[in-house]
Length: 236
Image 1: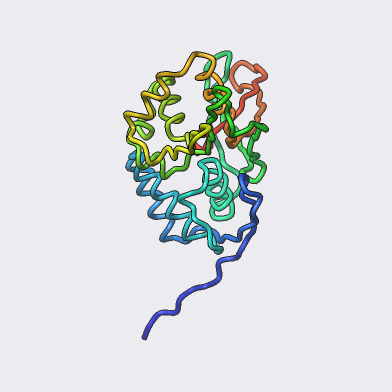
Image 2: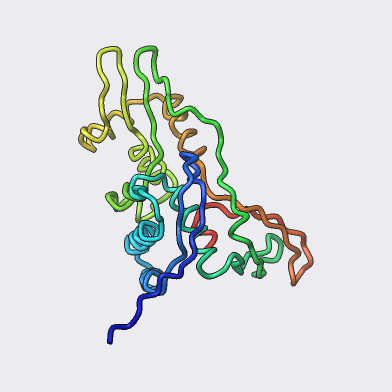
């Protein structure tokens, strides 16, 4: 006799931060939780990212291409699915700024917000050349081992800039960055002045990300602490 299949997972709704689109989703099932646990235990970033994307893709009930969503979209969606799957409250250990002792702080994942600044994705480099920028995706990370390796600040900024360039517009043509060689892209960036590079760096630094402000009194020295969690690595 065949065992019955369970189809009792509740459905929820959230808003995708970058698009404002409402989508439906269900919590993780045991099979998805097993894959995520195996990925996290491996400490392999590529495996972890793939597990996150696959879990989001399976749990979202609408036609959404998760592989083309911005990184902060996936971080937010994954966090909300996780909250409905195993509980909204997550205990974290946060170090006191005074005595460096770890303190347990409980955060509610449903209170997480996406910090978004109004920054134009059009950067005017000269009177005749402008850049059209885009938000990088996790697929970009999977295709770029340098990003997965999480190199030093300067190297990471450079890789994020390469991943965020969409189009170069001149008076004569539109140049699609993905059609160009990496060597030519790096040469183009290297030819910029300091002020031009700074404009692009500011765009990268202002990219939306998950944010949660916490306050706690240290259990060891009674110091009042304020701390901001940013990005998915801070939450899990």
